[in-house]
Length: 382
Image (cartoon, rainbow, N blue to C red; front, side, top):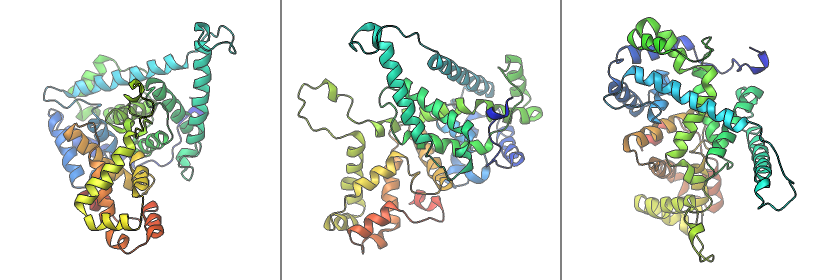
C-alpha cells in the first residue's frame, strides 16, 4: 500500500492487552450474546469500560449495530458487520461517481437540465464547509493533523450529509465524528486480510473462536474498515435523537400557511425545558439565583448538548460520559438521549456551591469553562 494512504501509527493502545480483554469477553460467552451484552452494561455501571479495553466493540452493541436478541448467534454478528461495511462501500461509490453535466449552469434553476449543476454547486459548498471544520478540529492532537485521517473524516461527513438532507451538514457534527474517531482508533489494527471474508472463514471463526481470537479481533477492529465503522456509528447516534439537535426548525413548520409563527428549534426548546423545568424542580435555589442575576444559562446548555459535552472536558472524560449516554439509550430505546438532560443538571449541581455566590459574569465564565473533574463516574452517578 502507498505510504501516503496508510493510517498513522500514533495514539495506539497496547493491542496485545486489548486482544486479551477482547478474548476474555468473547471466549467466556461466545454462545450467549445476551450475556456479552449484560457484561458490557455491568462494566459501564461500574465505570470500568475504559480499563476493560473493549470500548469499540461495546459501542457497536450499544448503538445497535450488532443485534442482541436471544436468537442471535456469534456468526450472525460476523455476517452483520460484513454486510454493513459492504453497504457503506456502495454509498462511497454512489456519491463519488462523476455526474455528466448538461445545460447552461447560468440558466433558470428550475430547468430540468440544470438540476445536476445545482447539485454540483451545493455539493461543492458543503465540501468547503466540511473541510474548514475538519481542518480546525482537535488540531492540538497529532492524529487529527494527519491528512489521511482528515480526508477520511471529510468523506464520511459528506456522505452522511448527502444521505441526511435534514438536518444536512451543520457545524458540530464534525466534533461528534471526531469523538468517535478518538475513541475507537487506538484499538484498530492493520489487517492483511484484504477483501471480503468468505462464509467458510466466518463460520470457522464462530465455531472455533479460541483458535482464531487474533483473527476475530482484527475482523472487528480492522483499519481497512475504519471509515465504514465510523460512518455506521455516526449514523446510528444521529438516528437515536442527536440529529434533532442540529435541526434549525421543526420539520412541520414548512407545512404551515401562517409565516408569522415564531417557532423555536428543537434544541432551544430542549434547553429551556432542562433549565426552567428540570433544574427548577431539582434545585430551586440555584434556579432562582440564575434568574436573579439574569443568567441565560440556556446558552451554556445548548453548547453542552450539541456536541454531547466534548467541548467541556478532556476527550478521555467525554468517552466516559458517552459510555453512560449510549448505555442508557440502549436500555430505554427512547431515541431521545434522555440522560443528557440529567447530566446537565448534575453538572450544575456538582459546582452549585461555587455558582450560588457568583455574579452573572463569574457564573457564565465558570460554566463556559467547566472545571476539570477527577472522574466522570462522579457526575454520571449524580
